[in-house]
Amino acid sequence: MADNTLRLTTAQAIIKYLSNQFIEVDGQEMRVCGGGFGIFGHGNVTCLGEALYDAKDELPLYRGQNEQSMGFAAAGYAKQWLRQRFMFCTASAGPGTTNLLTSAALAHANRLPMLLLCGDTFITRLPDPVLQQLEHFNNPALGVNDAFKAVSRYWDRITHPAQIIQSLPAALATMLDPTDCGPAFIGLPQDVQGWTFDYPAEFFEKRVHRIRRQGPDLTEVAEAVALLRSAKRPIIIAGGGVQYSRAVTELTDFAVTHNIPVVETIAGRANLMQDHPLNIGPIGVTGSDSANAIAEQADVILAIGTRLQDFTTGSWTAFAKDAKIIGLNVGRHDAKKHMSLPVVGDAKLGITALSDALDAHKSPSIWVDFAQAERAKWVAYTNEITTPKNGPNSYSQIIRVVNDLCDPRDRIVAAAGGLPAEVTAHWQTKDIGTVDVEFGFSCMGYEISGGWGARIAQHEREPDQDTIIFTGDGSYLMMNSDIYSSVLTQRKLIICLLDNGGFAVINKLQNNTGNESFNNLIADSPTVPKPFAVDFQAHAASMGANAETVSNPAEFGEAFKRAKAADITSVIVMQVDAYDGWTDQGHTWWEVGTPHVTTNPKVAAKHAEIEAERSKQRKGV
Image (tube, rainbow, N blue to C red; front, side):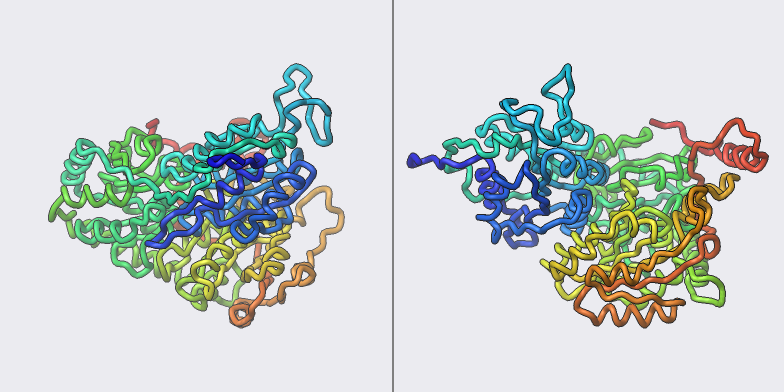
């Protein structure tokens, strides 16, 4: 070792670098990388594993049960930390790495930081073909790791140890960039991991990072202010970017100062408290009648920190065709959607700039009165549908039970299936930033794994609070092994497992488009001669969790109290009806492909009904 260099392997240098990267959060310095999730194989255990062993105190490594679930856990962790910190995932060459593709896509769609350190084939090619290598006869440089180019914000393959001097800072910059945030993939050939290089010592010096805040252009602000001043019926759509910018206070103050109703996206749930007078509810396909009622009459829409996906916009039928949109977003791509007037910049700084320029301007009180009257009607409806009755058990009833019994700072996690719609529609926010409904990639199986990652992050700041997971039987069967992970690591979860006998929400969509039930519910699968119910209680208990089965919402509430008092993961199982009890209001039109030609008259009739609503669709870009 020369005076100003350190001779290290590539793997050792990567881990040493990560160990010395810090971030300031609320005035406190902490490592920007909270550790990692890892499953070892021949492609990462001998070199990267050796390096991680020496840094196990600085970068704790959580042993995963499945690579895809590790990625989901990393995403849940990043969400809980509002993208200020991330976890790495390491997997072996071959199938261990390809298992991470789905979770990388989830992180990419949700704009979440995640570092993927994955094994790769030998750069020398001397032992080719090796175990788990896919050979492309006409392109020997092409491998399975190239598949990550489509689902990564940053991608590199290290072919020489010196390359990480450039690659690691670039990957970190991507993950901490408010605009370009997403997964960073670094392929690590098995031989290169162990090769050495004399690295400059300054590369490993402690560095404290801060996430950049980009101020808006003053001309764009002025144009947006002029449009807002002209509005008679303005609304604010508050997306997940409000929370990532830590701009909830600014959003609330802006709405109050200028008397503008606020609606929330799925990612933006828990931007405002449930009882705030300007909170008019969630918007869109899984929204509320109140939010959708004011959206279709709004003349100016201030969309803050949202990518305006189809569940928010009702496939672009939720708004009047002549409504004007202002896109306040740190990302240019999102700010300009559907011919929006862009205000490109950080949400906190952008809201403040708009408010200062608007001065004392307020929207008409008659408009706010209308919005609040619509909200009161929606609250009455949701109170009715969520109140347990003599009818069948439903998702919404259990959401109400949990909502009434949970602590304000408990975190709620849901993902694909029917539960995201029901949680979005009916959850009554007790505290800001406490809801994670993963609908960016709408990925089944995220619930338990993402909840485990969220609980790890939550334990670092709010160890006395709980992470509460809503999952159906379909998602549970798809990915459940992190029940075991949560028990092993003593990161308690409360899992509300609501069993409706299959993929009931897709069966509902199937029926709503005129089709017969087919291959979604277990009972309707043509290749299942004798359906039977899974003993979910026994299954969860076998992984070390407390588990019990209940028959109705009242029993569920008592079980939930026991779960709150317990110190290990609890799973509460209850059957719900596959057909009855769904929320039947609050939905906008949603474009799905339906057959233009069919011999089934019910399908033909539904196709005509669905297409008739297309006339409302905006034709922007």
